[in-house]
Amino acid sequence: MLTALTPRRSFRPRLRPQTLGARALDGSNDIQRRAGQPRLFHAVAEQIAALIDDGVFPPGAKLPGERELAERFGVSRVTVREAAVALQASGRVDIRAGSGVYVRDRADARQDGLPEVSAFELTEARSLFESEAAALAAPIISDEDLARLDVLVAAMSGESEELSADEADRQFHLLIASASGNRAIIHTITSLWRMRTELSEVQTAHASVCEKDASSRIDEHAAVLDALKRKDPVGARAAMRRHFNRLIEAMLDAEEKRAFDELRRKATESRQRFLISARIG
Figure 1 (cartoon, one colour):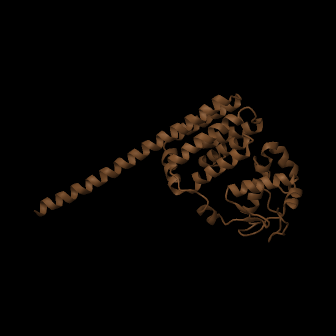
Figure 2 (spheres, helix red, strand yellow):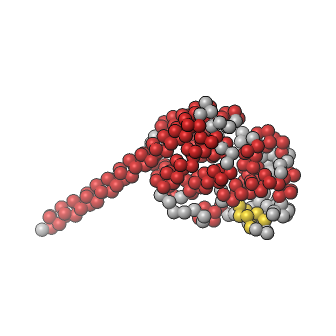
Figure 3 (cartoon, helix red, strand yellow):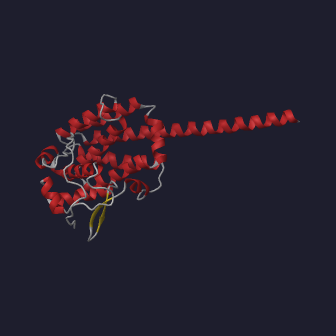
């Protein structure tokens, strides 16, 4: 259970409202209006993460107790507890039984808790979980979430000054996971996205594909969104799978090209050495 403790700095950050997840401490009802009940804990988690980013709770600090946070955000203690679990899944805090919730150092959080996986393994896992998340979300996704997904797809094409294409991509997938209403799925997909953004090998593999085939990425996300708008679980699942299948094929092509380039480089070096030896002889 969380126990209350006054933070090192005043618990009054500068207000920076966002479309997803209210961040104003005096706007607790705003959180409830903006986030549907299945996603309420996610909105609270975003608000707490914002306070961490603002330095209100520095690395190593203990968060206030459940009761205090529940009162400040106007939510139940259960919702605060779920938000803490979501923050732990994303590597932002540690929950210590009998002690409380502590802010993690982001540099340390990036180094532990993640398995060594290849980009192919990760993409295969994402295809399995995120396709089913899309199918679960399709019948119940809110109009508000659909409107936000429209904004994110537009941002992927460079129409936003606030969001990069990669960040819009990340938010798109996490929002669909959240819209599924299944906490286990949300936790799993959040963890998979940590691997996607924090493992250097995976980052490199995705960058080599996404930068060269941006138009396909936009079209595929738009197809997923269209199926969600139709409330079509089968179509949403199929569209998400097509997206990941194309991504895997593109990574395979990139890997084959890299291997071929490496083979050609070694052949060139061998030829040069042979020519040098021939001249000496």
